[in-house]
Length: 112
Length: 115
Image 1 (cartoon, chains in turn red, yellow):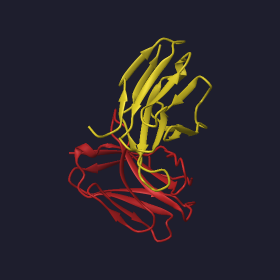
Image 2 (spheres, helix red, strand yellow):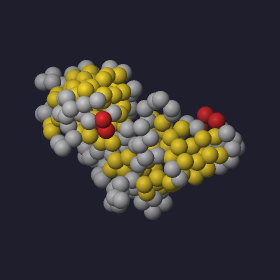
Image 3 (cartoon, chains in turn red, cyan):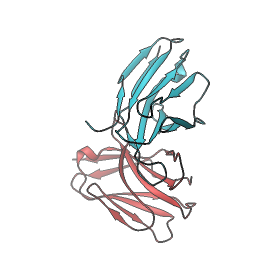
């Protein structure tokens, strides 16, 4: 699976949009981009995933560039409960046993 | 609840003891994964089951680690003759299907401390 690069940390203001970047310049055509987050003392929580189109759900939006070499996770209105480590992962779809390969993630601190 | 359940939540053992960690996946989920998470690091893959079959155990760090899922539902991760470097959070995840892009859903893990 392709490697990803994320900033190690970032601060966000409560109530504002949080934009989390991820670079995956070696992504293959059959690899999806997944985002998970991990709040302290909890297991990773699935947020969203996409292949090439932008995606939106009740938690976040995922914007993938046209060349698919980078993406941005958008939390539209950050709350204090969004403080967590956010992981961007690329993963081949359609193959058995697709384990997730976590990098260092981005430690997001939402401040009042 | 309907999520992945792991027990115990915390486990303390003396070096050399054997431990068993349990995972109850979401009902009907075919795939089950175990991950190990050291302090300050991201989770790392240990092993994968498709129903009762263990199809990938490439991430198990040594032959002291053993996992099973005999009836294709509950899974147990066993560590024999524990050592201090085994101290970590052990996470279990399940997903509905094996061949699609279904996301994995994680439990909150078992925090293992070896004294």
